[in-house]
Amino acid sequence: MIKRVNTDGKNTFYYLKNGLENGEIWAKYSGINDGFKGYLKFKKNGKVLLFSGDGYFQTKDIATTLFNFKEIGTDGRPGDNANVCQISYQIEAEKSWNKNLNLK
Image 1: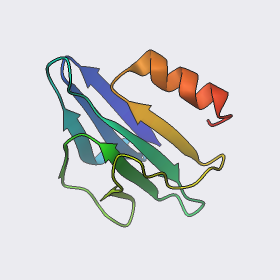
Image 2 (image 1 turned 180 degrees about the horizontal axis):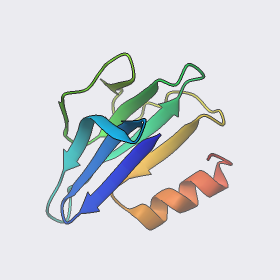
Image 3 (image 1 turned 120 degrees about the vertical axis):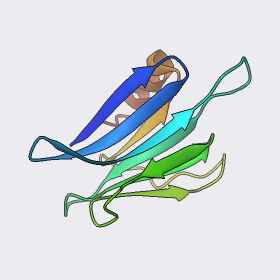
């Protein structure tokens, strides 16, 4: 399970296992032309991959066997399937994109 915490100018993603946070991946942003965009891909073995399409992501104490990060570029996409969802600093736009793409 992924826990997401949004604060002004920072979104943090945590991998939760047995209710405990196992590392974190975050993006900080500020200003009118700043933000982030990416994808979370949930694998059948329980591993979650965060793909960054745009923005500056950082990591801390991640267990790469559970949660990992990869840059794919602004036009990249990890594939269209029910196990991928788009993430963005614009929460309402993110919800709309995922609904329109039938993603969960």
